[in-house]
Amino acid sequence: MSEVILQDVAKHYGDFVAVENMSLRIADGELVALLGPSGCGKTTTLRMIAGFVDATNGRISVGGRDVTGLPPSRRNMGIVFQNYALFPHMTVAENVAFGLEMRKVSKVDAVKRVDEALARVRLDQYGDRLPKQLSGGQQQRVALARALVIEPEVLLLDEPLSNLDAALRHQMKIEIRQLQQSLGLTTVFVTHDQDEAMSTADRMVLMYKGKVEQVGPPAEVFGRPRSAFAAGFLGIPNLLAGQVTAEGFVLESGMRLALSGQGGLAGRCFLALRPEEIALATDPLPPDSNALPGKVLIMTYHGSSVEYQIATEAGPVLSARVRAPGLGGQPVLPGGTSVWVHWPATAGVLVNEH
Image (tube, rainbow, N blue to C red; front, side, top):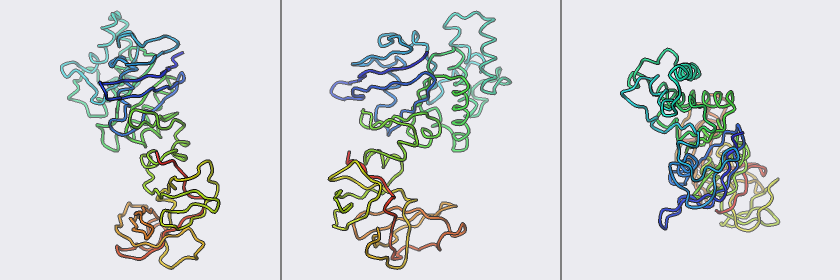
């Protein structure tokens, strides 16, 4: 069993709190993504799990073994760094074998395990090459093979896809997920990219200013963010401030909007609306509609969709994404067009201010 447990783990640098009292349980064989903006504490958390950074407070255990005070070499963790950290003067096979040499594994066993690791990442024909002779995606696979060859209890991935182009990122996140599942390996994946986290993780841990903002399966966190920060970071740019009342949601401008299926919050909060939930009309709508008058500021074309930035009379600029004309959508609306933005009462989600 390789369950990882963090109990009230914190890291302070003088008066600066990088990670504050973080508690998290990562199940055996689970892939958990630490997600958040730069400076939120996700990489510091990973480095505390690895042993590269000493925790100021708290306890870290792996498989029931307290590793809080152990050096990295005694934690049996495989690590893939953001820049891969390959030795340029060593061949691919030598890079992969390095960790085995440090563990005094016999040469015969090391050769066998290196061959198996390279075959696992589909580089079994590249053992004699130098890193500079490989593409970025191949170098990433070498780093992954080097992390796996030591047969770690836990795999730690620190922004492993950030140096790859879009096509390679898509390919490699699928390969990492398939490999992790086939091995049943407990994995912690650090990323600032919500798409990477959602497409690879069993659970996401959204972090902000050193604290855990929200934890849950990707569909839950994405579909039901709990705060304005979580909503914004997960791609919901439309946040309407107001008050929850018995009649619905009252904007700061005084306009009342209908809500359906929303619950749990009262008083001041935000209605978070995804751009895809908003529709546009060029003719006035009935007074009881969830509709705001506005004017098109910017139109951007995205192939299958068209995105509009709409200045509304209620105050906020709203982003709306609708189907492109070629796919059955309405004709493109140029800048300056007067429109009504509207959405059903069931759309959106209420979130806390913080």
